Image (cartoon, rainbow, N blue to C red; front, side, top):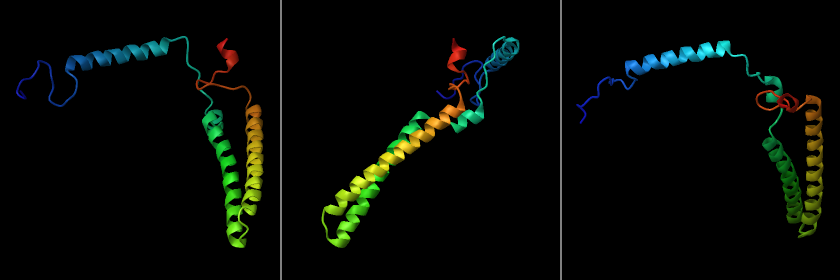
Length: 135
């Protein structure tokens, strides 16, 4: 079976010479079409695209801010209860304080994101177009 070879097949795993020639011809036609095209795709502004966080990143940051505040408050309360022997009192108090701190952190972070998006100007998609450009 290994001895049977199709005509035009190569042993090195590459394409037959006829296919290589047709691919080279196709590449030349594509390059020529790109040079004569009237419409060019706008390049996105790389500074703005890299500086703006994704929506998923914002959501993960906000949720981690809230969870971290609650967990730190609960941990401090639990530790103080173990230290002083006041079973649930410190845990409840510091759990509440941690929740308040977490909510304040979330509100502060959303204000920062809102201010940075307003200062960045119109929202652009990945191709660099604004909603007004698509109309």
